[in-house]
Amino acid sequence: AYIRSGLANRILIACAEVHSTGLDISTTGRDVAVIFGDGAACVCVEGIETDEDIGVMASALHANGKFAGSLMVEAATSKQNPRITVEMIEEGRHYPVMDGKTIFKEAVRSLPAVTQEILEKTGLSLDDIDLFIPHQANMRINQFFAHSMKLPEEKVFHNIQRYGNTTAASIPLALDEALEMDIIRDGSLVLFLGLGAGLTWGAVACRLGG
Image 1: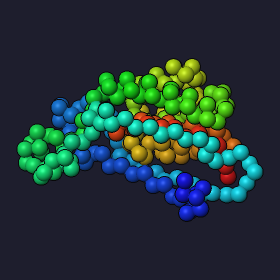
Image 2 (image 1 turned 180 degrees about the horizontal axis):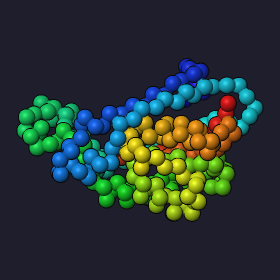
Image 3 (image 1 turned 120 degrees about the vertical axis):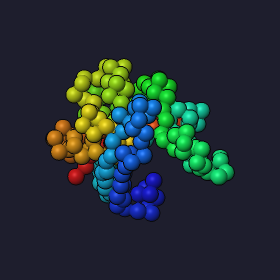
Image 4 (image 1 turned 90 degrees about the vertical axis):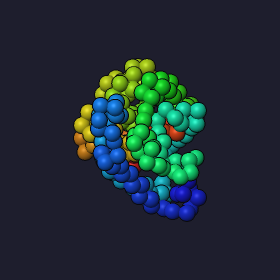
C-alpha cells in the first residue's frame, strides 16, 4: 500500500522475536514452550517501473476475534486495572497460553480457504505456484494443508524442525533459506500464508524479481 500510494519506494520489513525469555518452561507450560523459538529476519520490498509480471500479485487478510482467547498472553492487559498484579504473576497469567485443538482446527480450515481466495483473485492454479511458504507454527498443520490441497511434499517449505515457531520471523526466515538453497529464484511464484493470534490469517502471492 505504501509503494502503490507513492509514500515509499523501498521498504525494509524487519521481523524479530524473542520467545525464550517469556515462556513457562515448567510442566504446566510444556505444550507451548516446546514449540516456540527465537529468530529474526528482514525482507526488502521495492517498487519499480516494469512491464514484467513480478511483485505482489494478490493478498488476502482476515481476522476473527471470537478466537482471541485461544492464543494469547492475558497479562498485562488493558481490560484490567491495574494491568498486572502479583496474583496474576503467581497464577502464571503473564505466560502465553494456547488452545492447540482450536488453533489446529481453524488453521486447517482457514489456510486452504485463503489459498483458494488468492487463486481466484489472480486466476492462477495450484500448479502455477512454485513454492508454498507457510508460517512455521506447527509441522502437522502444514502437512495437513499440503495433503488437503493435494500438493507434492517438495512444494511446501518447512524449517520449524530446525528453529521452532519463530512467529513473525518464520516466513522471512523460510524465504531466505529457500533462496539460499536455490529452491526458488528470480521469476519464481511464491505463496506465503499464515495464521496466528487474534485470530488472524492471510496469504500473499508474489512473483520474485531481481
